[in-house]
Structure formats: C-alpha cells, structure tokens
Image (cartoon, rainbow, N blue to C red; front, side, top):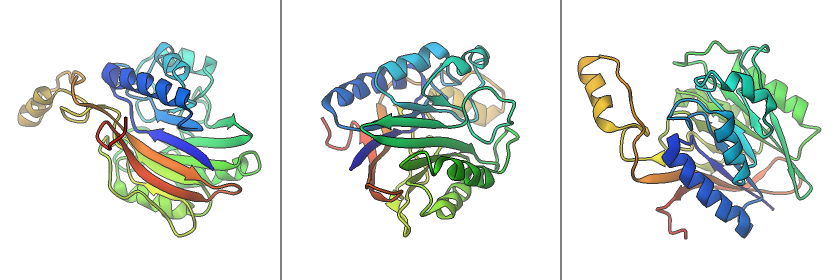
Length: 264
C-alpha cells in the first residue's frame, strides 16, 4: 500500500513554516511514502522563489506544484528550470519554462504528478485542461504506477467534471485554488480518489489567508489595496490517499486537517 499526503495551497510564511516543521517530523516517522503540495502562494501570498521551493523540498516534500500565480515572482522565471521536484501547470503555452510533470520514485513505486489550470473565471490563456490531461496520462501510463492530477481552477463544476472524466484513468483527481476545503472526498466508481478542493495550508483567521480588514474595505469601496498575509490559526489542509498495488485504483481517501483532527 502506498500512502500519500497531498497538501493544499501553502500561503505565506506562516503556512510554509508549519508545513516545513510538520512534514519534516512526519517524514522522519515514516508516516507517508510521498508528500505533495501546491506552493504557488508561498512568497508573501503570491508566487514562489527558488529559495522557498528548495526549503520545502529539503524539509521532505517530494513534489511541488504550481497554479495561476506561478510567475508572480519574476525571478522565478529564471530559477524554475534549475529546480528538481517542481512542475508548472501542464496546459500553459509550450514555450513556458519549467517541467509540465513530475515522476517521483520511492520504494520501487513511481508516481506521476501534473497540474492543469481551469479556464472558467481564470486569467491565464491556457490549452484545454481535459485534452491536456488526456495527453499526459497517455504519456505517463507506461512510466509510472500511479498518476495524480491536480485541477487548479475556480469553478467547482469544472473540477467535478474533470473527476468524472478521468475516473478509472488516474489514481486521484483533486482541486486547488479556492483555498476552502470541500467536504466531498470520495473514491469514484471506477477507482479514482476525488475531492473538489484540498483547502489552504496557511492562516485561517482572515479571508483566504489574507488579513480581514483590507479585504472588507476593498469590497466596500472598490479601491485596490495590498492584502497582507494573515498570521494566526495556521492549519494544514489536504487529503490522505492510500493507493493499492498494482494499477491505478485508490483504496481510500480522506480529508486531512492539522491541527483539528485528533492528530499529534
């Protein structure tokens, strides 16, 4: 049995500090075979840098994924090609830097991971996420034991549709981007684990990881302003997966929240 922890969007310094501390501890305990996390909001809540990515990987995260904020830190455009263990969304233009997939290997298990961006209510111009997922699954099928697909999208309908579209063809389909964990973790009829959104690994006192008052003021007067990262009630959110050998089927999936779910 392969045990995997997948963490939702890590937000700012509070989120990455807790992730690094707890993942390092859990890896030393041998709690998981793989740890995957979305890191696109780790640098002050917008983007990521090479230094931050290396710190997360050194703490024990096996694979890092990105979303629509992947280029918010302009220096990262020059750093991403030098980094192992991180991939940008696969349906960005082909000329974009960075890897469009990850192949991770531990204990003779090979895991394929990739992200697609949704197209509803999202800013980047991207290729069809459904057809991109088709292509990558076909290319990865002979190389890996399991495939995990992240759908970084705004619309819940788009994520749910992707789950059903890939049921039986990937071990898991999980959503990110909205920062609010959904209560629909389940294994679909053909064996694919699914959840609409993993939630946020960061400060939950605030609005999607940002301080409350500036966000409220923006809604009231419409004036652009900075949204500093909040600082308290830091939680890690995601899913725990158990994947059976051999093949693509998921044995179980359950929502993960730390602290708050009776874990040490």
